[in-house]
Length: 229
Image: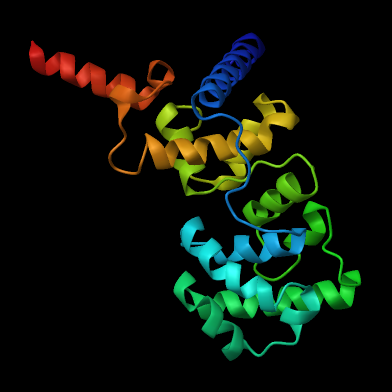
């Protein structure tokens, strides 16, 4: 690939992403994190709980949980069995309880009970990967971050923006072509789009406002035309 063609692809990606971002923002309006919380630490706990679980269920659980336990020291002092009872309905409750307690202890002991506000320190906490760290950075600290969850991974591949299942590679590609101030909200827009018009296995392409920019929709249209001949 020549330098010129590589530059052209980069420019096209930026233009396409910008248009998708604009259309989805117009379609759904401004978006923020769907997990209910009052502090960065509470968002960290809620995001850990959200793995393989719906935000609706997490919000239901944390509405009661955070009334009793809300600070790192509270969770650091818990026994795993006690926390497991609270979060059982979120699934994978044993692993989640263990990680939340260990992360809380690390925050208390290493960061004087203050949640760190950078990727390196956040991802050093037990159970905290880049997706969780990006959620906290973008929504609690105003630090540009683009969380790549299952919706973001699936929809960016369907659109043809990426051709990889690797979340880190997807994050890198998207961040290279979007302004940093749009990273967090763009992720939220893709998530709400996935829940509304592009659910897994049954995308509603005929109602999708970005279908004209989508590789998957174009393939479906081509198939329909072929059957009509």
